[in-house]
Image 1: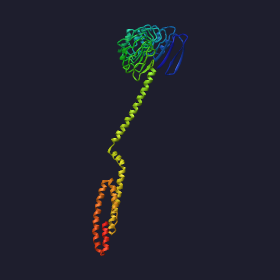
Image 2 (image 1 turned 45 degrees about the vertical axis):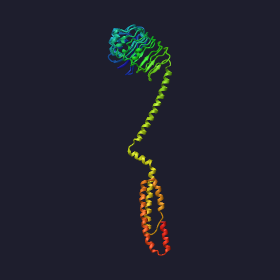
Image 3 (image 1 turned 45 degrees about the horizontal axis):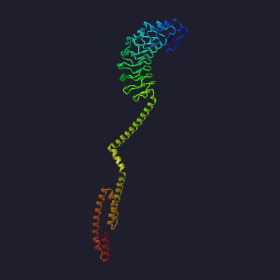
Image 4 (image 1 turned 180 degrees about the vertical axis):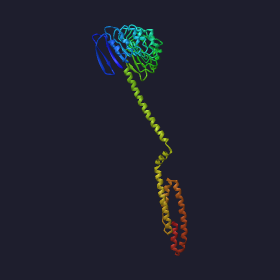
Length: 407
């Protein structure tokens, strides 16, 4: 059963118990036995409880809260607490504990025994260091300790292998230890509002850092941060720095001149993107042309046939003319056999000369046919002999001879 319990010990307050799953709401008048009743009545039923205890007057945590053994999230913020009871260590189910805005001067040892904690918030207290027992919190992933009085970095944090988020803003730190890079799993580091004058070079070895915040320090110069290959956000606002640092193209900057720097960077990225698109288009076009040149043979034949459509048309015309010539030759033979002579040889010769420039093969065929004409000419001369014999008149013979010369 998941629920949120608001418990108050201020005698002027109204207290309520809300069950999120059942959507039921109950209101109780304040009573000193409220915490006891809540613990005894609902401890066996609640498996996920969020408790906020308002101890404005008492400044202490009721012992009955420590009997809520199924608590996973406990927020006890702004209650002037100076410590917690020893029985607090019984809350082994706690995953999240918030003790912000209290008056803790030391981290309670009972808290160091909550080995299942993953999120611990101790900001806005009076802490100056961490106890050695703090290394028991091996599962801690998020630790916020901002607005305290740390003058040196607590090296107990080195022994927390799962710590990924560390909030140490508004403390008194001036430097980081040279072996700070041992915190290899750290992804977010907030060091705003401290007293750094020089950027800690050891951070350049933190390859896993994604968020780095150095707002409100006294740093005057920043190194090249391109070595931080995982960095997504770097904030250096309110430092006496004249220009942004060199960072990766995807890093968001917050600080003096950062906005202008990122505008120029985005403009360059846009130009490069357009140039890359144009280059890709040109390359795609070149590949298409290369593929067109390497088409299968059948496509080449079709293309060649299209490109030579005019000569093919001319060849077809020659074939047609050739067939016409053959028909004319046949008709000439028939007419010559009937004794009729047609002067068509010179006309056909002109056609042959024209076709000879276009199709050599056809010209050869026509030349062969020309030889046939010559043979037939001889036949004509042979037939003329009896014609000369039949004419006895000398004038007629002369006319015949004139015709022979003309032939």
